[in-house]
Image (cartoon, rainbow, N blue to C red):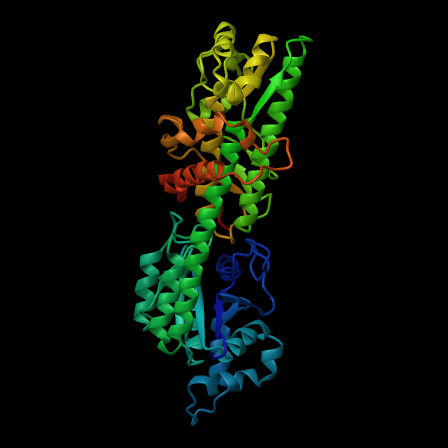
Length: 472
């Protein structure tokens, strides 16, 4: 294979060059992103990999701050009778004293572009097209390297995307890509690489390998995320805790302990999803269900949470009184009472006794059993669905927390719970809550897979329509 394709990320100061680097690298820690101008002062590089091999070397560069004055200076370096164009014109500037003093930042940009195979010219599409931008492009195109304009922040209401496309076309730049680094569209990264292919056909094989690898990674990430949510739902649906009839405070203690256990299990799922998508624990904040510093602030078991999600609490008085914990008097969906259990023993229904006997015998001694109410399971699933959708649509350049609104979650709010949830209720051994984990179980694995497909197939796997990321 040839060496990595070298791309210089260039443009005016504060247009989102480092933001583009972060989102393409899926790295929230790369460089510094802020609303202040001239944040990047030095060239910094990183690689895009495909199957462990570096395909593209990206170089973040400082912003060009005074292109108008620089262009005048560059023109002044050539004697009137001498006609110098292209890279030699830029090289003469780089050899001048001003390249190390007054125009030091611009010199870093042009030097890196000359050393690269092509450049990504990042534009803040919210800015008006001004003379300074035309002078920047005059200097950059003098480096004689293919230049792909990348229109950033196009999802903002004040975007001037059409104005920029028209201006760039008049300057001879017709290959243009829109790529919002804060809230990139699904497929946006692929389109960026495809546009590069049109400019650099010699690198087609390398870029196509990168596209294929990124698609595989994205699909694997979505499948893993959906499975994490499916495992959470199975764990909570299968959870059952026996509560003795005496002393009276035993029920309250069991309720509090079970609530805490479910909250910890949900938080573990949230943490795993953030790691999977390579975000930090403080990158998420919900609008109506605040998740601050990686913690769900709104209680999963509160009636307010249910109301916000449009989920109705169970009909049983016990479910409401226990704040989302159903007091299951007959377990497993059976309608056997004490007399029926005695009849089964007398009748020799040993298969029934073997499967449910221990739990039903507890009823004879006054023992009760706690399980999570359906309404809580619905809220739990809806919250994970919202988070999955937001993570899928968030760029790693966003500097504000993820804002989770209330997307369409009809699947979990109104439709019957999937059969896998009902099966899990009859298998308390499937729950890892309060244990060191569960042994391999093919039936449990099938249930998790079914639920994972429900999460992955939902229409809210993409960015919710009312999610508004914060822009620099």
